[in-house]
Amino acid sequence: MTATWTDFRRARRRSRQAWALLTAGLLALAATVVWFFTAGQFAVAEPPTAGPRDAPVLAAGWMKAVAPVRPVPDGLAADVLETLPVKGRAAANGYDRSAFGQAWLDVDGNGCDTRNDILRRDLPDARFTEGSRCRVGAGSFQEPYTGRTIEFQRGAESSKAIQIDHVVALGDAWQKGAQFLTAVQRQHLANDPLNLIAVDGQANQDKSASDAATWLPPNKAFRCHYVARQISVKAAYGLWVTPAERDAMRRVLGACPEQRTVVPR
Image 1 (cartoon, rainbow, N blue to C red):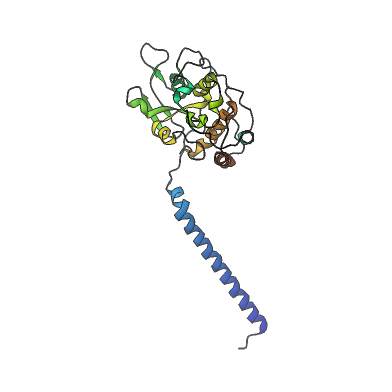
Image 2 (cartoon, helix red, strand yellow):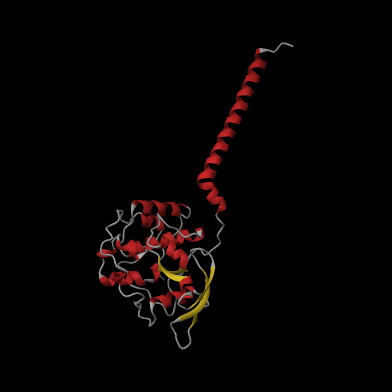
């Protein structure tokens, strides 16, 4: 049987289509392999988190706001981020924790030190030690950085399980403008409930003085609030961000464009 020219062209076209599909499939397979052996294997291995999406700032009735340098702008966190100055880190020379005042001062004047205020605020079932109206002795909560439920029991060793984290680490703040604040303004920064969250002790140690470019909470559900809270603190105390930090914050907020700043109320 003799094939016509039309049949020949049709067969050749089908052959080209088959080769094109095969090539596309091989390229997709190669891309998948590359993704898996770079980032994918970690994404697959990473357990899903269902932790808190935000954390409280003030507790009505007994907790007072601390006066910042300027009010937190009320608006989209991504918009406020673009208003922050962008600079490199200043030298860490001269940094000392004492530059931010004595640890856990009663800056808001409610009669209780800041550490116990934050424990009482963040642990829904916080219980005081006998004879005290301030000293939190026990409690439990779903911790925001990891999503784990943690039991707190006051004691030399057990207290380390829950630590009070400065959302904008004091060491980071010092290198991004805090050294130019007054002593009183630095005391407020260190004791402002906006900048403080009760968290998993090991997560706090892992974070250390990192910014958003080098550390984010393992609980992904909390990252939008965490970054918005850092932006709010930096805006309130006139601190800047580095280019890498700004870019990291932009990436996080890209997943939650409606995320607003965290305004103490």
